[in-house]
Image 1 (cartoon, one colour):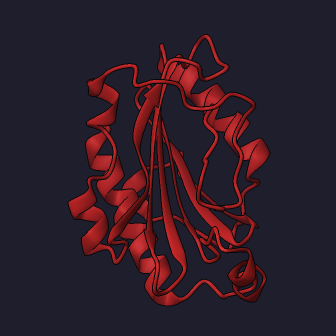
Image 2: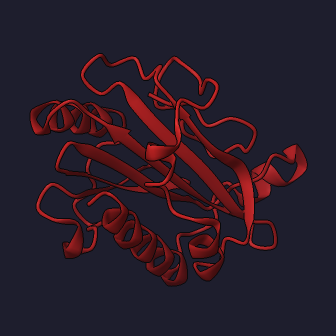
Length: 180
């Protein structure tokens, strides 16, 4: 699994950190900077990286990128995990759900398929997670995406706006297309 570094996005998915790039193919499955700009996240907070150190032998490759909107102090987190099989991906998704329990009132877009779930339990991080084939995706927005300690507390309780939910939904749909 991956650890987001630099930007205080409030999420840690595992114990290992991103290593040196493992290869381009999985990086090509992430949301692009251009897509993120259209979703109102114009800056790259953590550049796209991939790793073969995921902590899972059955899901051995992962990639991540984090975008942000400095003005609104919000972030967009995109992670993709490549697994050896659909079954391994389903198991990995369940592990993510263990970290980010399902919030039934925070439903993901139906375009993500029947495995998709939403989680608002780790607010200020709001996430959609799903499996598509042998891939697992985790796409989230953070309403307190700051690395400035003075701003951190003042934005910790910012609400998830309709505009951010719309951006998250569009980002997840775009991510889903890239997992085909």
